[in-house]
Amino acid sequence: MKEDVITLLDDARIRPTSTRILIYQYIAQQSDTFSLRDIEDALLSVDKSTIFRTLILFEEHHLIHSIEDGSGAMKYCFCRNAADCDSDVYHCHFYCERCKKTYCLDESAVANIALPAGFVMHHINYIVKGVCNKCSQ
Ligand SMILES: [Zn+2]
Ligand SMILES: [Zn+2]
Ligand SMILES: [Zn+2]
Image 1 (cartoon, rainbow, N blue to C red):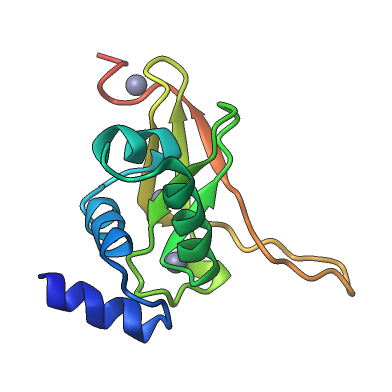
Image 2 (tube, rainbow, N blue to C red; image 1 turned 120 degrees about the horizontal axis):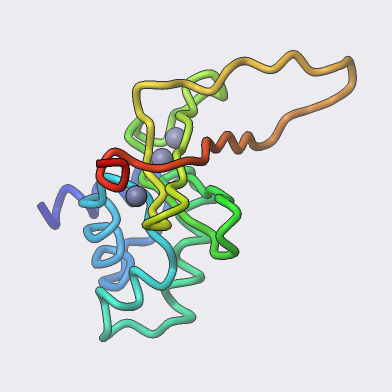
């Protein structure tokens, strides 16, 4: 498992330090989004600024996606397409206004938005807000 992560980070051209491996192992286990705070709480031994820098690095190398869900804290989710997502396979997210959790809607790809000539998309942030299946019962 640890060897797999080292290979994976190497492939993404990220030097596999022990901290990065630890953080990667944590985020790879998350089925939905997580925040910086979630990782800080889970990995108490790791310096907070290191976690933050690692998240930025992982995002630059497309190991994770960042999502602004309107909660004020940036959320992230693990890229399950081996760092190879086109904009048309980016998935949508669902923000539950009751439990404040942001879910990955892996089944629903982001709708293709036709941009006017000369506009270049770098990022798409598609968020649905409402009440999740646990809170709606
Ligand atoms: Zn991706
Ligand atoms: Zn909820
Ligand atoms: Zn997601």
